[in-house]
Image 1 (cartoon, rainbow, N blue to C red):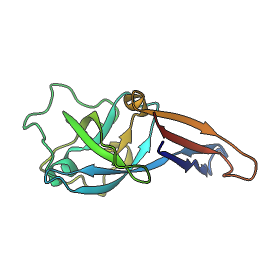
Image 2: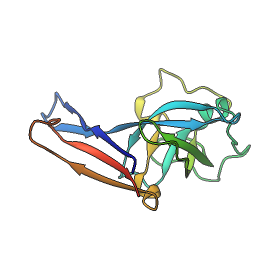
Image 3: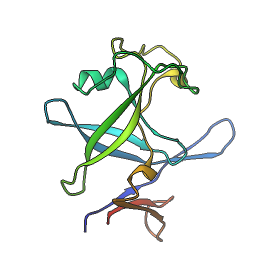
Image 4: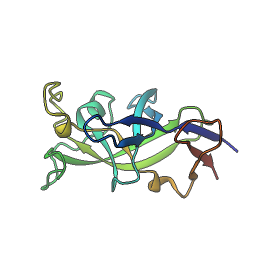
Length: 155
């Protein structure tokens, strides 16, 4: 059985003293030519669906619908297109996984680096879409990372 343990990252927010926690996972996305490109994603159980920038999807040669949906992404105000990501999880076996996703933004225009961070498309992985094939759990052991680990195990 393939297994990966990823330490939970943290940051203390200066203004309030609260602690922000997150987990990043590297996915090897399969591009349009069948090659794999390592891409960092936030594991976000709070997001409703996996998201990925439409511009990057087009650069990878993934299928990007020409016309956006009739709605906009509420949190960022960006155009929305339906997409699919096929990937392997870096650090695990060679199993391919596929998830539907929202491709955010204009596929023909690179997002401005000067745009407010909250309006940029983000790489968010909704782990619940993978529950048929993977188990996700958290654990904290004495002497381990201060906020524990996210453990991903193949079923």
